[in-house]
Image (cartoon, rainbow over all chains, first blue to last red; front, side):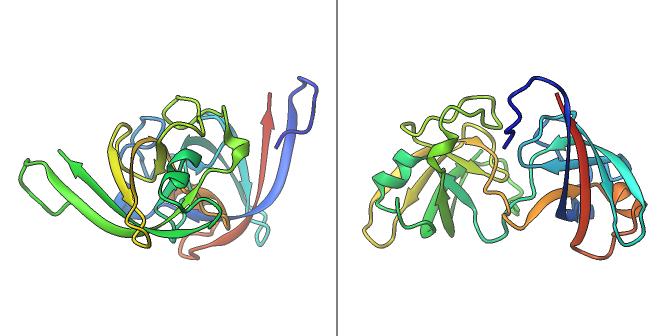
Length: 108
Length: 108
């Protein structure tokens, strides 16, 4: 995603769609290990390193807030699992893109 | 999600939609810290603990494969960031559900 070959710090700006955490996540563990706290200014992002500070601006009112990335997300509502290439080939869904599968696992 | 109040191990079975990793992820770091290897039998899941073994079955041909959860995903294609409740309130998008925002951050 970073086509800048230099090692200079550079600023990225983009317009995206944002959602926010439901109340029920209060106190749950984030991907970084820290607990989610509704009162803190944090965010989930797919790929940015934990600790990255993002300035998020609402173009409708010009308000902005600085948040720290401490979680991975947002997740797809439609899809539940991403398989490795080998796993997808083994059950014959590689090249299908999306496939209905059955999951079975044991929770302690 | 777990309504079983006992501490007994129990098996979960569900039908879901699966996708698989694009080739370009080869060698990239997963959320667990391990590198993604196309040849290994691994998977990304939203919430299951890393190390959980999932049996994935293709109902069309009955083939199944056992994969180990070592990553978080699948991610939404439409959404790029989940904000904490406080952050969403601060810029006035709380109660909107989904909102267009501008992101700005610096990469080293």
